[in-house]
Amino acid sequence: MTLSRIGRISRALVVSMAVVLGMSACGGYTAGFMWVLGTQYNQIAGFKIDDYTGNLTAMVNSPYSSGGTNPVSLVVRAAGNFVFVVNKGTLNASGISNGDGNVSVFAVGEDGVLTFQNSYSTAGNAPIWAAVDGTGSFLYVLDSQAPDYATTGNGDITVFGVDGSTGRLQLVPNQLQKNSAGQQLNYFEVGKAPITMRSSGSCIYTLDSDQTVFPYGIGSNGQLALQASSSIPLNTVKATSINATGTSIYVTDSGSSLSTGGTVIPFTPGANCSLSVQSGGAVSNLATTSKPAYSLTDSKGKYLYVANQSSTNTNYANSTISAYVIESTGQLQPVSDSSNPYPVGSGPVCMVEDPSSQYLYTSNNDGTITGRLIDQNTGQLTSLTRGSSFTAFSGPAGCLIVSGNVD
Picture (cartoon, rainbow, N blue to C red):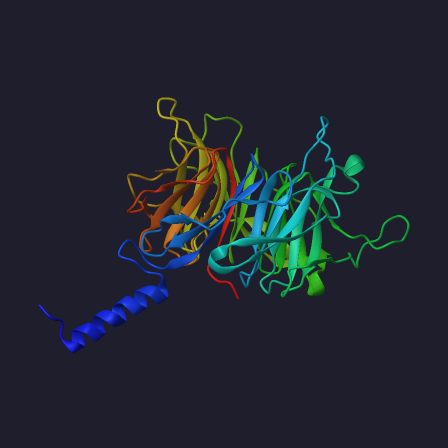
């Protein structure tokens, strides 16, 4: 049968739109880009996220070199045009940094392809985490070992100004504190051997290995302001992560042994970056879970997801995600689903939500990425339509990030 003129035009328009949007009969357009660290060979794997299925497709020339040794954290600038990778470097037999950690800057090109630009040393040693401000003007890097670590055991935050056009980093001196010689410090000291960091509103919090949180207020020109209470006790056994939302701060505590699933402790941020435990206190993790290692709040602030690296069920050891509904008070209620907690790859390290707010992904110690579809009405997680496990590396995968735009 010969197509009518209108039919031919309609068909041509459909084909043209498919080309423009990158669609095919097998999926949708690219909803965003994902970058995953590979700790074994100092690499970064890049993937494109399919909007229709959540499927991951490797980028051109992926994996890329991380630009240093032992990559542990990465963050994307707000405009999506630069990725900053934190390379921890190596430690000697006494656990002291060999001074080879750095921050590598990558430009994000077409289809999310990364191009190395330069690397920068931090003020301290053994950098482990990074965050950017909402404007993309400043990069905050958490060093697990401050310059005076040998005598204090403390960490620090190194602040860089970011050139939005080139990605170049410029060290921001500490205008409020000086050393014994009367010179401005080039870092902001925090608590004992910090393990991670999160920002929330005008505050930035480090989670420290002595089971405390060290708060700074975020000021102008990248400056960090000491708060009245410089160390907030958590009353935890082994805090493993801190997750900040607009109205709540959640800390995961793995507990004293694998026989318990640990807890999630909700805090309310207050004046001067203070934290107070919410009414009801700590929330027990779900049955059979163990070693909660990371948590993520969805983009709408409705659900909290906790990545668990182990299980208390010795007959079926499994890594999982616990899912919770966040009530108006900030308290947590388990998502009603017999499948909750949800299985993922072995040893989840980090979690992200894709830019379209449809999918959740974990990076895992077995070198895989696990993807799940988020039910926006219930918070339940289900498998992706074309398989939920994607291989990133032959060795362990580290943290991961996503971006939906490149300006």
